[in-house]
Length: 266
Ligand code: FBP
Image 1: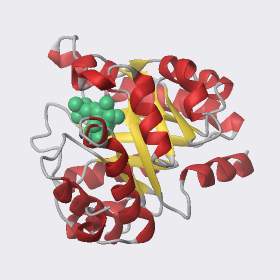
Image 2: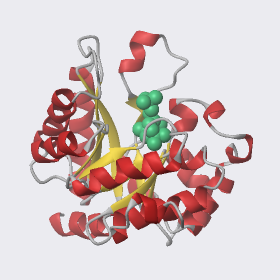
Image 3: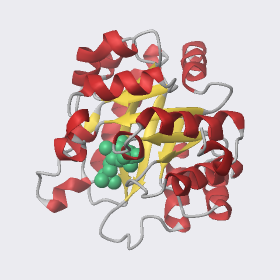
């Protein structure tokens, strides 16, 4: 199964780097996160696939009804945990099962993804679920991406380097094959995050939409220079007026080492 994992990982990390489209917001934030033209998942998925995104991370239900768009064109990461913002605030610090590793296998996925909120009062439960997911993913040779998000009552600033690198290290120690985490605001601190992850590839989580695309591209550039392996980005793509151009610009920074200033002109 180590062989299967390596083959699948290489479909996501092209030349060791990846631009992944995050598309679980319909549940995590609700359909109001999408501009009206992108409430229909097919419309935005056609654009990102067309722009040559490396992989798409989504929940099983949407993957099942859109396979004809991405199948055989991009890698697929099936996320099997989620939560809605309709829950009481305190309980948003827990993600629930949202499918099974077998759903990912049945969909032909290249990886499975699950969130752990490090520092949450539900950390213990989320870890039990993480290890259940990981155990069955291992039997199929399916890599596990961990959304290693530090958040909880004792965490004042979830973007603080000490907090983010703690989560990244915990993700590595819990057997993640890929780590998705917050950007810490600059190159030097993100380098610390990468170092703490001890060789497990670290991908930046996109975050809320930046008003100016150059600012987002600068963050991506810093992540790459710091040794990060790419991005898993949603809102900065589907809330942008030109998602295709944005994917192409991000790809240029991640895969071609273009500067943000060069990439923004694409
Ligand atoms: P973005 O690029 O839009 O930030 O997407 C990354 C992501 O982790 C999504 O996978 C998820 O839906 C969302 O962010 C969670 O956001 P929040 O920080 O509100 O929990």
